[in-house]
Length: 223
Image (cartoon, rainbow, N blue to C red; front, side):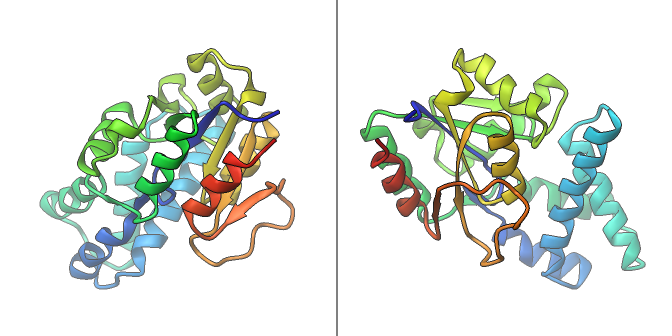
């Protein structure tokens, strides 16, 4: 079935974390800790899922940052913590996003943001990046007290949109996310932004590309 609605993961897939790197360099002394921090954040959200611990992405982001600083034998001030976390709300879009969203919209697809971030953070991020006009809906799975890649997260999106899961396709740069979506019955497309191999044990989408225009074109050409 050709999807009617395209869901986009936001952090890293649509928005570029690169603006955080100078902050981590200045405050923690290593720009590469940006990726470490985000991985810790995702890991803790998965642990909360597995253990049924109710929390939110913002709290986990702060906890991950505190833990990372402690590993560096640093204690962050409230101002330093806020400098990093507020920057997370003001990321820029990858350069290939606007053209791809335009392609999909012109082809008649509904385009929806789907994220673990809170609704308020999503709105802030997409507004700052100038992307709000491209999205028909914005869904935070936090409203369902869950996180991706729980099947509940993707089914919640289907419920909000009043769609069958088979009508939805998730686009993400995280193989755990595309795997989660496909496990829940959605279709998926993977954009390789890191160059790392796709996890060999995960369900693998047919649509894969290294840029978002390539993803959009393959979706449009589906029959």
